[in-house]
Image (tube, helix red, strand yellow):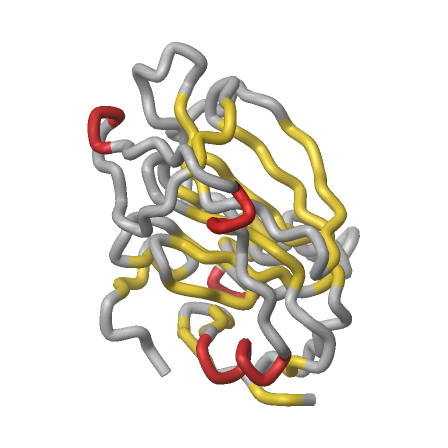
Length: 204
């Protein structure tokens, strides 16, 4: 089912908060050498090449015990909000974007707009996605930042449209970590983007 608060972008599903989730046939799928290598398929997950990324590139292996505190990203001088893109390489991730929770299928790219509060953990075992993928309680993400950045924790789920709208968090970071969710709670509360549609989750 299509999300009522989201529009389809050039690739993937563009959310109302400006973030984008790209999965499967919603990517720019190309076969550059159809005669020579018919099995070679390119899945371009990024909507364009008009934004240079000059920040760190790395990966994190998540379990359900690794629950990041909600945060945004800014540059070191706190003068610019910093975008991030995250590729779920394998397994099923859970991301909260401005208060909305998504299960993220393997091979999906999440473009997180600077100023959108977000947090990640692994989807607990036993959640079935519409494409048949079943979560196992772990996933690997590859992340890349637009610029060198730090984590700026926040309790707010409101989008900070500019640096001055960021409200620093000064309490116990455990209070703003991704909450511990059972598989059934994920099915009841989260969405998933498959292709260009928001879909429902099921218990395996």
